[in-house]
Length: 182
Image 1 (cartoon, rainbow, N blue to C red):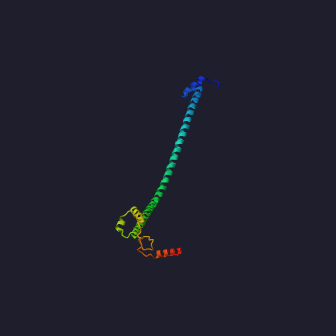
Image 2 (image 1 turned 90 degrees about the vertical axis):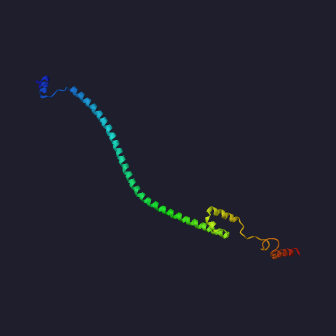
Image 3 (image 1 turned 30 degrees about the horizontal axis):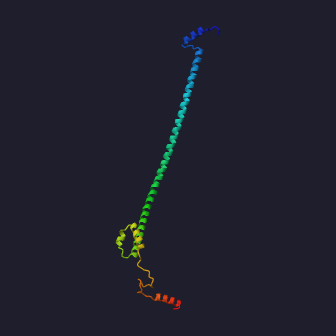
């Protein structure tokens, strides 16, 4: 190998169509490529992190969509049941309202009868037209009217002045007279 010179090797290399690159150039190119490779790896790591983040967001969105779809189907099922429940409750409300109205009307009828019993001359037609508030006022007024019986202090004869039965009074006076020695 001692017989081959650098010039002869370069000439043989040229004839084969290949070129000679000095090692220093190769080392410089390698160093430049390593720097570029580092930048590419950094960018690749950044892009991978962004990709992973977006992928996770996509998975979260898909999970939220699935949850919403499940909730919607549950809600639709519940809404069907709730609609039936609401319909039943509305019917109960209607029945209770009618029952209450019947009870109020029966109570008003009894109040009118009580008023008629206390004041027989009261016109039943007028009582039918009165509101519950007016019936309250009328009942209050009737409570303050005398009831037609009068209290007597003279043995039940009514009125005053001695026109009635005085036997009870005479007996009292006679009893007092006996006591005093009369």
